[in-house]
Image (cartoon, rainbow, N blue to C red; front, side, top):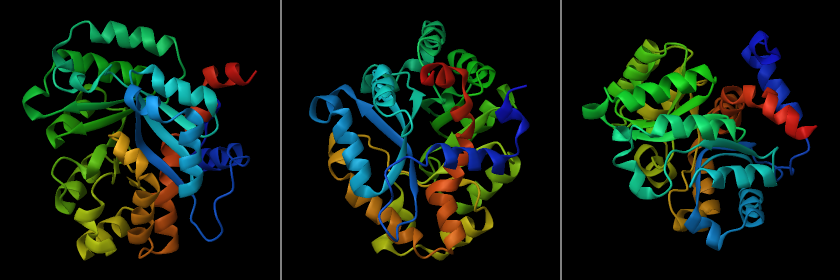
Length: 291
């Protein structure tokens, strides 16, 4: 049994924190932050080198980045540049156009399996899928593949798709993007109760919706206090413009999280992501690369 599998969640978090002790120091007074949802595309790479991306993280006080690439190898490029700061997800799209029809591409599971063998990955996604396509055979294969490799599955999806993922692989861990496609605290409570200890939710691109003018709405504050260990703060760099305004978006996130108790704020900004992706620090591919 792998060491990470024997450890309780808190122990894995502490391991992750120890492993990242050499990361650039967070500016004085800032709660440490892991950006739990980012993208790095061929277009981004033309304008922003890996060094430029790390500089943006430094300027925003972000210690680590959970990132997928389009094409997928872009994430590995960032990971090879800064192993202790980058948590790579295996994306499925070579271009943005892939979002619309991947679920009908029967070649995709075999291609994904080959890519898993050629890199070091913490998760799979982001997968864009909506209720009418929840029974896609391609999706089913990919969910089972992610579960078999102990990968976090990042879903941009309707609630029905999230439920389907757990039906296909009850032990899988899912990170549900953007507070879901229908952000509603009541729906999220229902989903979190239905899938305890297996479903996490990221807040990316919902900042204005949940905290207009930087003030967290009472119903969202109550949700984060009720489930402080299930939400992850994130930016979602879905475009080059989003990267260009990265520090501003992180400041916006820090503004609305500042109204939360310090322990809850730290969980949203850092500790929940550290725990969810804690197993990645102990992956054999990482140990081999480090050696």
